[in-house]
Length: 431
Image 1 (cartoon, rainbow, N blue to C red):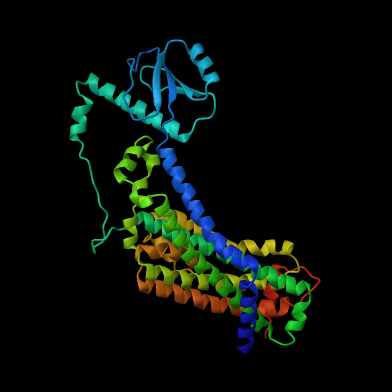
Image 2 (cartoon, rainbow, N blue to C red):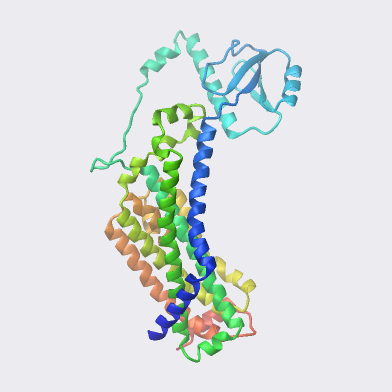
């Protein structure tokens, strides 16, 4: 134990005192805050964009009756009778389009542009035309759009918890996924650092001197725990500094003073599917629904547990190979569960954090560091968090015992390429 603590201290102090570590610890949160600011400004610049486009309409069947519904879109509709002239005008101006109506029903319409169209352009035009043909059919049956609209009930829905606080679905999804992605990133970044460090020490024959004073297991555990503490230090520093920088940036760009009604009016200029409830996402009051203590504890527990589990596997790989090129055949089966966890977090957990797939994935140790981190902001019970953590650390002790069997032999093996057959042979060997 004394040797493990000695190696841990050496690994930790050596790495945290490097200039590169200090610079990245400070620069990382600044980059995250800058990224947040850029995304925020781009979103609002797109919503407030007033650039108009001329849309020529060639309708030989008069199916549109010389008019289209008035909308808040950025299109100026002009009916033409000569497509040659319209096409020539489009070729000279990128901000012009041609709508060619193929029949009376409106189910054969061609949209022509000089350059490729955006999904937003196509979707918005489909909505405008759909509204027009719908209104035309109503008129033929003696009905008016106003009569139909009067039958619709406008729904206003507030999502709240039993405590009366806002449920904060949007902010919980964002916080959970960002936390999970950072855990995923740090596990890979520092896990690969351990693997390359072990391989480098092996190739330089430094390890032969080290293992003459300490046991291979002590060396491996000291290195894993030391780098884990380095990663946890930087991880917590990033979370704290990122929160401070993003809060300051939000106040600086006026995120708290944005009029929600104004934002909703702006969002009407784009299709509803693209608007996406942006006004709810920036509602700062949603932060009141977050259990920051539970999130912080979850971050520490599942970052540390996930890192220890995967680092022991990366260390075993590093001890078994002689070069970085040989690691590729072993990296895929080790990294696939972690990648799978991120995919599940994106698809299943955010859609329904209490689904069977989400719950079981947050219990399986190889995916739980990522999946459980996404679920925690959605008020997961302490019992579930505890069970998942116990399974994670129990699996770590099992894996580190197996990894140590590979490490103690592989670290002193030279001149032969490692294979799965050879590794299984090392695992079956008695201590």
